[in-house]
Amino acid sequence: MSITGQVLRLHEALYKRTDGRVGHRMIGVPTLLLRTTGRRSGATRTNGLVYARDGDDYLVVASNGGADRAPAWLHNLRANPDVEIQVGRERRSGTARIVEPSAPDYDRLWKIVNDNNRDRYSAYQRQTARPIPVIALTPSAPA
Image: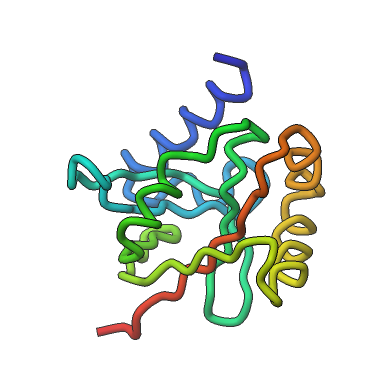
């Protein structure tokens, strides 16, 4: 595993272990914890992901660091779009909407996430022929 991969895993572990007290802005960009349901196992899966905002929605990107294979959490979302979003210590249920490059609002959302992440997503897209989707996470109304 690369140094970058090790740093990201450590960051995610700290975010989870401290229940959001540490981790929201640890790597210089805002990060959330996305909890999905495993499509085969039914188990809760948690991933730390850089996010941007579009109104009430949280935007994340299924870049997988520019790998030719999509991240496992994207497959989980395709099977079940119900999620939990944790930003800092706040947790909310929500729904994921996968925005593919053919969608009318893709270019606008891509610009938001790519600008937020210092043009890294464009670099990742150049590394793979796989179209990288943007995921809009819409939180449910607070209880």
